[in-house]
Image (tube, rainbow, N blue to C red; front, side, top):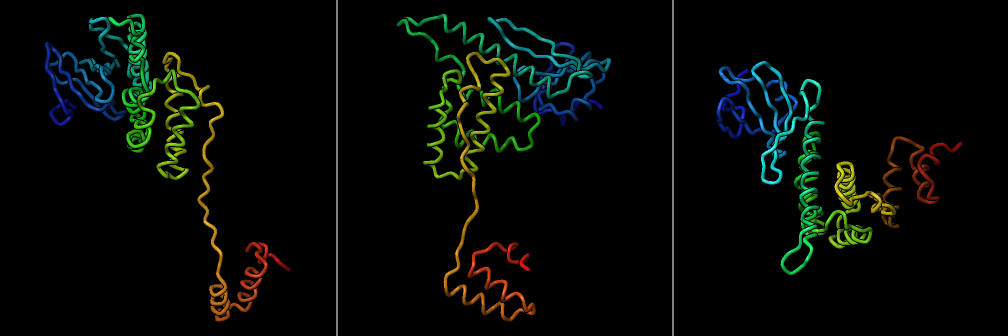
Length: 274
């Protein structure tokens, strides 16, 4: 297979190599081959900045990460695609980029502005983490990632987005719950927002984001999600029901329904009576 115009959304040509930008998938990684006349092709992932697959003319495929640090371009080899899955390679790239951003933020904390105010605002906030790290990660494996994206855009970002992750408190999360209640969202929707946000904190802790801990979620309870609706028959409705069942071909049905109405017993209890 030769990589042609229909393979990519964007092309760049440099000395001896072709660069392609495309959302990497397992199928694409498996199918990619280096075009004839090229030493290798670099297929950059459209989801994670700097993450790409280097395909050599020999057939070898390697996951790599290109980034800038201290103003210098750097390259990191993540692993051979024959031994490393796309999911793990992308997660490694996200983690490394996150650590790099955190390191840059930490260095900013040591600097002060001319007014002497600490630049702690450079630390990663919830919205930045969700957009730059969480969404690209879940896109790599979750079919319903668009639902997560909608939840973030509509409910999480407006309320929690600007908060620094390492400074979030249980009180902030409780306020988030109350804000969603104020919007009159269903308990199930609020619980899904909590699951998403808690998973984001779990990933941040796994990827060693400074100061982020799951302990902030201790004691946070999901809302009781009871969708059952109880209805009671009025006197007229009960009368009409009894009249209707008398027309049934089953001679026991009028007795069963009457017993259910007058005793309030469960259906199974009445049917099992002897």
